[in-house]
Figure 1 (spheres, rainbow, N blue to C red):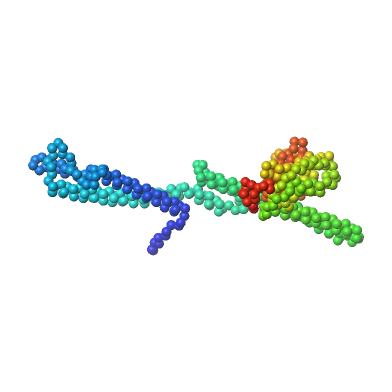
Figure 2 (figure 1 turned 180 degrees about the horizontal axis):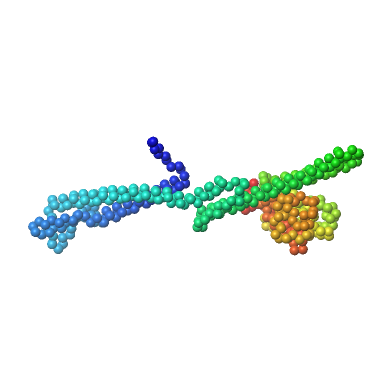
Length: 418
């Protein structure tokens, strides 16, 4: 059977091996060149021992630094007999030949050693690259095995705190965020289905009761129809809130300046009757504040904050609404009296369909989407959202919108164009 040679795949390991081998080869060639130069300069020349006439004659042909031609050994003391002209030329030729042979030998032996070590270094580079990339292979294998059904799996890479360990830890953090997002999505779908099913079930029950009554009168049918319409309005209100939440989470496409002072004043004025019915008083300080973003979504944010402050209040309570400008920010603050909210329950209030506390759980006038919409709209506007429970009860919510002086194309430091 004939063996077919296959070129290795263009993998990271293969490229690292080529890199290691190439670096070693270049370094070896440079080292060989430097060694050749130094040995060639340090070669003293040719020594000849001739015992003619019973006396030793020593001659040296060398190439001293700064000179181009050979010279004879100095004989200032007169101890050595001077060679004749023919002998000197023969020595010069012999010295050149000897130096050429030494150079050739050095190049052949050095090149052979360099080639052998290049092959060895390539093999060692392949092994070392495999050891370095072993944990990366673990990350790849685990990532392929993880799906939406087992996002709880983690890499938990062992080993020293190096770049690959940081990569594994970052991947684990990403999995944790994805798991939380998937779980929040599942809860949202389940809660939305439950909230929509309740008015639909009520509608069906009202229609079935009205149709099952053989003695139904016009008035009873009219009453049943009015109840069905009320359930339909509840569904419409829920769907509108869900659409607003989706719009807020999707971000803004068009940024325009809007008057936060006028917008807030209009929302407060539209709820005077509601505040009077609940026995809640207003405390308003509306100073000029011009923000940039989407006026429609910003109005929904103000409506939800004000409605939340009115709904979860106490008889004889109050709602304080202020607008102002701080530096390059347009600031809205809504504070209210009401039931005490624990610090550890505050984050839940900004999640969809979450009602925290006994008083809130028994109220069914809200959908549990108000503050989650506030959070989504604030995120879409790149606004800072701060919520602080009041020690005496109620909340203080502050939203800092980008001011009109901010450039929407300037990036996250000012306002991002989404």
